[in-house]
Each structure stands twice: as structure tokens, then as C-alpha cells.
Image 1 (tube, rainbow, N blue to C red):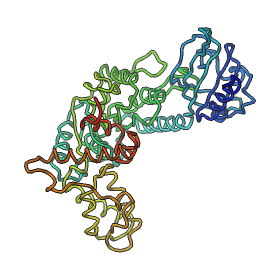
Image 2 (cartoon, rainbow, N blue to C red):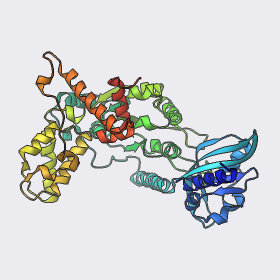
Image 3 (cartoon, rainbow, N blue to C red):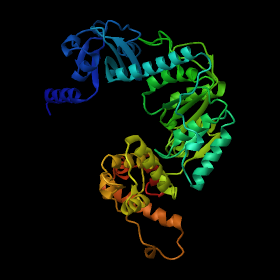
Image 4 (cartoon, helix red, strand yellow):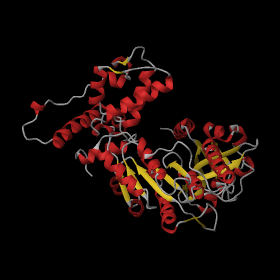
Length: 466
């Protein structure tokens, strides 16, 4: 292939990538700037091409510009937050990965890949500011938000679920960390709120944060706070640790937190102090930590996504929530509960479920657990016209659902139930993988479970090597 053609193809590829690409030469002048980068920055490509990066973005300095820092040091910067004001006065917040460009060992420029998180930053700042304002206006005795769940509101007749509730009741009296484990939709936050509501901290703040919902660079500032000057655009803001002082901080999907940030979390738990991003001072905080994960934490530790020392620090009180498909008659109890709730909310008088729907509910696998059950019933309530919810009112995946369970005669006598269930689970997983061409992500979507859960099952069923 001719060099000129090869270069044009490379340039076309860079233009087609859906992330901002900015390339400068060794002196900092822009030699490539795709349209995505221009959209992120709120500028035109022509305003930046051929221009020095500090001229194109006058609010940046050699120290705050990630491109200039990489040109100076020759060291890559990964997932660095950068906030700046463009020529038109628009504030932009991005997460950048910036790499030096070397030819025969000589530094010839730098390449930056940028993701726009301006809106996420704005929303997180508003949440923090609102919580801070509520705390100031309410004085020191900050009440927990109304609407937190209590143990009495958890509906179950399942022995394992009742045991989990009892463990939660006992843990409510202490300040020890609690680790709640369960699939998505099993009610982890409901249980955590109930523990807080039954604890001596019930009149203090309860704050929840999903660790998978934000980039690492934002999550650190949200948890621990920021100091003016820590980065361009940074303000003095308390983090969730400070805002939850005296109360409870719930970290959901803690296994999704970046490993380097887990080290800072561990230090905060051990020393009971936090240091804001960019600050040298430490602040003493009295916060009880609850954490949750939707996959076995031992798997997260083994795969290096959850620090072993943090796991042991959080794993003081362990509460395991069983999935809905293993909770016996709870589908019936919860179905009736949600039906009554929705009748009252919608001003309707639906009496119950047809025999076919009841049978389908009993045989369905409920990959989304209690949350899915509630949503299925609410969806049916929008369609029902008579006194009963019929099969036609259920979502498509349930209308066509036909579990390929083997009959009792297909198994030799004496085969225990766990082995039979394992055989059925294996056949479903194998079929999903086959239909998806071995793509684990797509198979997990088809099975209605998180990818991490499917990976765990593949190892458990010895379908892949651990």
C-alpha cells in the first residue's frame, strides 16, 4: 500500500472514532483535531488546527494542560480530569488519556483521547451543593431523608431471606461495616436502609453512591471532596464522607471502584479521616460504611477488581440475599403486594392474576429479581382492561418464555436436586453461548444476568478455566 494512501486511511479512521482526538507536535502546535474533539470543546476545527494548545485554550497553563505536561515529562497520563473554559466562555470538563509520540526514541509530539463528562460533573456538583445546603440549613442534627425503608416493610416468607433480615437487625446496633451480596434487583439497598433505620444513627444522614456510575476522576472528588486549585475549575467542596458525618454511607457496586481509589477508601476506613483532593489537611469523620456487590466478592478479589485488604475490612458483617427464583412462595406474596400498591396508585381495581400468569410467574427465572417482578406487574397494569392480568399483558420475553426443564423421568433415581439444577443451568448457559457465538457479553444479555455473574457461572460449571 502506498504511504500516502495509508496515511489518508489512518486519518479517516481517527476522524471516525467517536472520542475526541487531539494531536500536537513537539512544540505544542495542533497537527490533528477531529470533529468530536471540536464538539466537546465547543469550537470549530479550524480554530484549533495549526494553533498552539495554550492559544486555543487560554484558560489552560503549561501545568494544567495535560498535553503540555506530557510534552514536558515524556510520561503518559491516563484518565486525568481536566476542566477549562474555552474561547467562548463555556466551561468544559473532560477525562483525558494523553500519550507521548516517539519516533526512533525521539519525542515528536503527544496524542490525547478525551471523553466529555461536563454534564456529569455539573450534576454531581449540584448534588453535593444541595446536600451541603441542606446540612447547613438543618443544623448539626441532620435528619435522614423520609422514605427510608424499615425491616417491617420487607415482604418475605423465605427462610434464607428471613435469616438475612435477622443478621441485619443484629448488625444495626453496632458501627461495624456491612457487606451485602446479591444479584441485581434482590433488594440490597432496601436492606441497607432498614439497618440504618433501626440503628442509633437513624436520625443522621443516609447517603448512597453507586461506584460504577461515575468515572474514577469524578468519584474521588465526590467521595472525599475537592479543594480550590486542585485542578482547573476545582472549588472547595466537602465529599460524601463529610456530608454523611454521624450517619451512614452506602457504596453500591464497590467492586467497580478503581483499584487505586480503593486504597484511599481503605485508608479512610482504617484511620477514620479523609483528605480532600488537592488538600494537605485531613478531616476526622464518623461514618458507618455499608457496601454492596452484585457478584461473589471472592471472584472480584481473585480477578483483581477488588483489593483483598479492602474486602476483609468491609467483610465484617456479611449478609447474602438469595435471588427471587430461589425464594419459594415469595413471588406470590410480592405479586399480591405490588398489585395492591398499583391499584391504589392508579385508582384501579384489578383483582388478581389468571391461572396461566400465576403458572408463568412460578416457572420464570426472574433474572432481574424483585425489581423485574415489580416492573412486569406495573407494565401489565397499563394494559389490563378486565379484573385479571392475563398472559397477553406480560412483556414479550415472558409471553414466549418456555423453560426447557427436564421431566423427573429424564433423571436417574437418586440424583439430588442441586445436581439436577446444575444440569439445567449448564444447558441454558451452553445454549446462550452457542447462540451468541461464544460472546460472553451478548450471552449475559440474553440470559438477563450481569456479565460478571455469567463469568462466575462459567467457572463454577467448569465451562472455562479459572
